[in-house]
Image 1 (cartoon, rainbow, N blue to C red):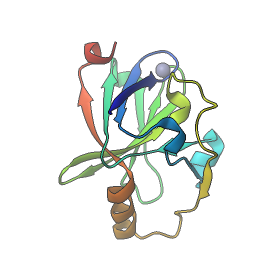
Image 2: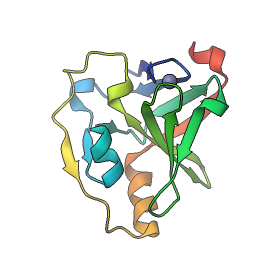
Image 3: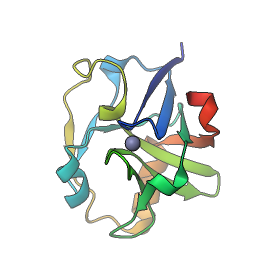
Image 4: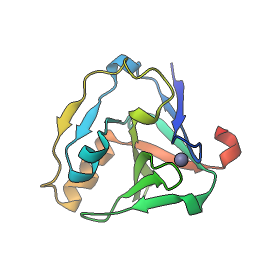
Length: 146
Ligand SMILES: [Zn+2]
């Protein structure tokens, strides 16, 4: 059964709703070891069968940071500094990885994170992996996730 898990940045400017049928204890949890994610202590998850809804109250207070291959938007709230999600644009729509640290649910129920190394990927390999692991995402109006 699909459950809705809510979360977002600290100040509430970026809100997310993660819809997945997978129980929390079975979520894949990846600790990306790239130079950005390591500095944030990132634990990320995704479900290609799920859906991530993202609502931004004030776009001017959101940084869409890019580095490396520059194909990914790292959504960071400028007001409170929290890194919430990374997004890529695909022909079929947005794909997202969700930082589970930002979810409102208890943080001790996740599986242990598996260190992940993607630095050597080409752009093609990166898209291919994300299609298999990331979550289809949509931007929604802020009141929807208030
Ligand atoms: Zn914030």
